[in-house]
Image 1 (cartoon, rainbow, N blue to C red):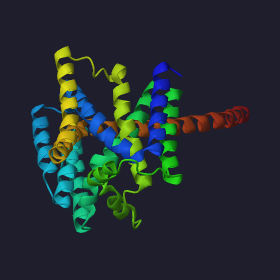
Image 2 (cartoon, rainbow, N blue to C red):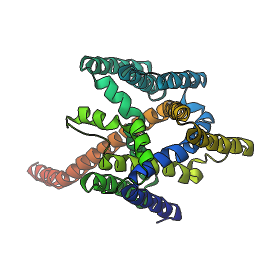
Image 3 (cartoon, rainbow, N blue to C red):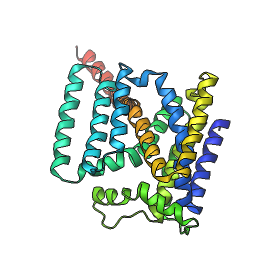
Length: 330
């Protein structure tokens, strides 16, 4: 195992252990302290790559939508904004032809109609896209792609450990008590709607932000942030002018300080900043989904081709004997 993979594993296990010991406190501290640093550095990294969009100006529109969405009180309209932004980004970044874009648009319209007709589905998708889907599902997709491209067994093992960690929290939930009551109340303000959203999605009544769900969120959020920071030598997000790096450090520190100075304003600011970074990452997420699909398709085709080749190889001796018999008969 390479040194970086060992550090990767250590940080993952640290996040898991902390999620068992202090889930409520870890969730809030990760979101408020690690979050802003992640947002600013990733936006900087995306900016240098034109946000994986055909025109950088589109990113400004996405940022405006994100800020507006942070001020929307209606859950369905908020969900529509998240869903619509994801679809548009997928059309711009993950399609390679007008036909693909049109097909994607038609499918998206059909899915939107289904969600609208079911009443609460848009609200559910609006809650889950910027939380579990962004933080956990897309993190897993990037991990799988990285392990496949590198051919590293160690990275493949990290994917397995990540999934086992989530399973452990769900099947053997922590029993930790709340040590700082204010953190639990604030966590409820931020993530209290995730439980009911999952309840409606999976048809399991009564899901709330209990210790199990809080521990799951604490783990995936903490690991999501740490995973970004330890990939500095891989994706090179630190290779920016020193002045910009210093500005990002100041901005992230000020964002955290603002939250503790004025909770109400800090809450709104961090929510808007979080949504800006999420929407700006949508093109990359869409591209990763396409690449994962292409990888799976390629693997299936290769396996099928191998099966056909093996079958042809097994049948060849029979053909040879038949040919000899035909020669003797002539």
